[in-house]
Amino acid sequence: MVQLTLTLKDEAATARLGETLAMALRVGDVVRLFGDLGAGKTTLARAVIKALTGEADAPSPTYTLVQTYETKDRRLLAHADLYRLEDEDELDELGLDDALEHGMALIEWPDRAPSFAPANRLDLSLREIESGARQAVLDGYGDWEGRLNEF
Image 1 (tube, helix red, strand yellow):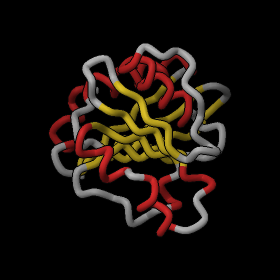
Image 2 (image 1 turned 60 degrees about the horizontal axis):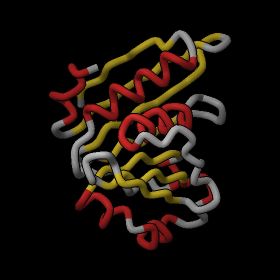
Image 3 (image 1 turned 90 degrees about the vertical axis):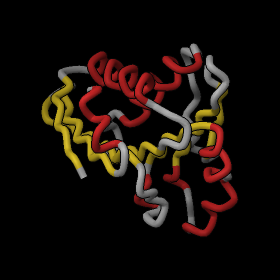
Image 4 (image 1 turned 180 degrees about the vertical axis):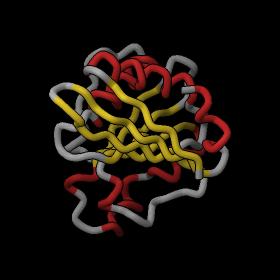
């Protein structure tokens, strides 16, 4: 595992990290987003979605659990919010494994399904450090170890 820590001074910096992340994503990538409520996970995910699809106002998948998008280059992007997941066994029904065959996945609240931790993944933790500023800790596993220099 390789770790990178970034300070994000405001919401715009969080969105820029999302845009950078979008450009680094490859088919089969899993990005697990950790952080408390209000830490910026959805802001970051929306920036990734906007950069890859052009959709400016992506809905949160809080109630649907997974929202799937087609990117500009015809890959799939699954955005999952597992906050309402009642049992980890429900994860099989969401089709994330299938989505990874043709695209990438952003997973909010991955602690609800701890066994979904592919060997090749990026774990990104956000936390507020002062009013509006956040700290992002990126833990790269598998080929992400060599890709964190893109940030």
